[in-house]
Structure formats: C-alpha cells, structure tokens
Image (cartoon, rainbow, N blue to C red; front, side):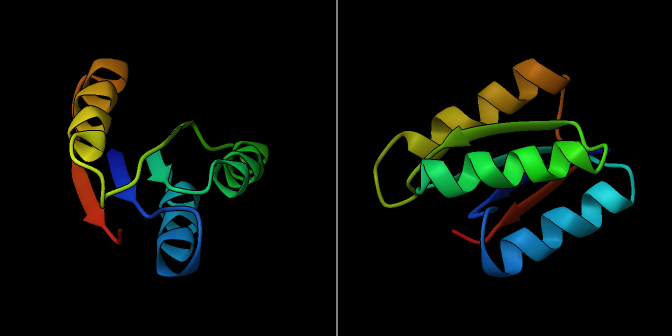
Length: 85
C-alpha cells in the first residue's frame, strides 16, 4: 500500500507514518520544516521504509496540489491519504 501524509514529520503525522512503515506501507510525506522532514525520512528508511519526502506548506496555494501528483508519478497511485496539515 501507498500512504500519502501531509504534516507527516511531527506529532500525529509522525506517529501515523511510523505505524504505516511498520505495517509495510510505502510513504509519501510532506511538511513545512524541511530539516525535520528529511531527518524523519532518514529515520524511516533506517527502519526499512520506502519514503518519498518533500516540502509543502498547506497554507500556500498549489503546494499540496503538487504533492499528490508527484506521489502518483513516483508510486503509481495512492491507497491511503492522511491530511494532518
């Protein structure tokens, strides 16, 4: 399964991402804070997760609209969509 999570690097988004990786899902994560997002992606990959991570700010027009097509291009589709942003 492929899970796309906005706001996926901290708080509930982080906990959700960890759970999905432990269940074997491929992840696409976006968040505003690039440094935190990239560090978390490294952590998830160390756990064996396949992770596509990119910056996106849900308060800025077009940023989430870019995230979804990028995820579909990378993985071929999305099975689970979680919006915490």
